[in-house]
Length: 465
Image (tube, rainbow, N blue to C red):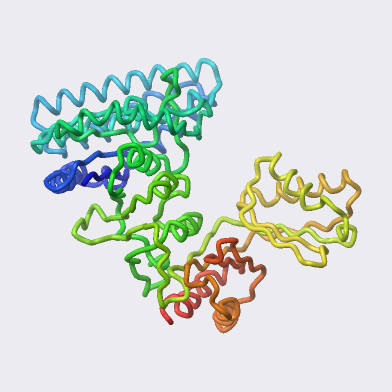
């Protein structure tokens, strides 16, 4: 059996995190061939992004302190990883070389006063480039053969869309097999930098949101892995946020479709893009807790098993706002919705939800809260140019509630059950939309009512059968 294991930054950055990772890999290696994928340690990616932005805007005084901060994080990690003196010195020297290259890159950005997407990718890649050698050394100290590789060295090839590059799958498959199969056949554990890839010319690119998970599933696809294990700091995917719903529980299993629906709603879950390669080959993905490795976690699988529960999970999305567009001049006017969507797209404002009445008198749109006022101005300007007189309203104090589960598909009365649960909690629904997969229903309510509505919905359609 072949398993790709991905380790998140919260696990790597914890006390004795590297030693914990080494033990997990060693335990897995007794039964399986293992490929490891690692994120940057702890908050390192955030530190790098902050340093990149300050380099664009500042004089360079921040570069030294940022480098010192990163050095402390990685030196402390090396010290806590159980490496021998010679090993620790060797890896510390590797980290120092990366820090010096980072210093030169940040200084170059300062001198130019410009942060291109390509430079940003290079800067942010240093987190994984420093964590992978530390993990590989810890595996060697645990008695395993191991080799650290960047995503590009491992064969992951993308286009030149820096910041969120697109995978070139056929070429990547060939190169991954060529780079990793000889190591695996010799019993070695490749340690691959998550999130990082390369162009055909060898320039560093990054895979965007969920990039480390995406790295793991890309490798699993190419290598014909039997499973992907995502090691993080939670027991699995839960029926609700346990900070808001006290009786939330861990799900044993969900389908790819359910997982993709839940990804948007803030569950400790994988980005839909990351699930793509696994879904293509039907490879199960398991979310597991690195602090409690004996727990089974949550399996994301191909089968869409219907359960007695109406919904598998409910979620609450904050940081959103509602924009309403209304007016008689919209009625019967072809292309009005297209103009609204086009204007928002041109302004790089993402639409999270949309609802339009059959009368065409009004339209409701949910966007990120920071974009609410700008969205209203963009829509107003676009419609005015076309002679459409519309009233534009905004409400930044709303949240989205979502219910997800294959049991909702074809279940009579599910909408009424959801609305009854919300209204029984004395909460008014501002907007309601059902997803095209029929296993997601989303509602907009006032932010002040969000937690109460979430708990009521969880009791009504997740716990009750």
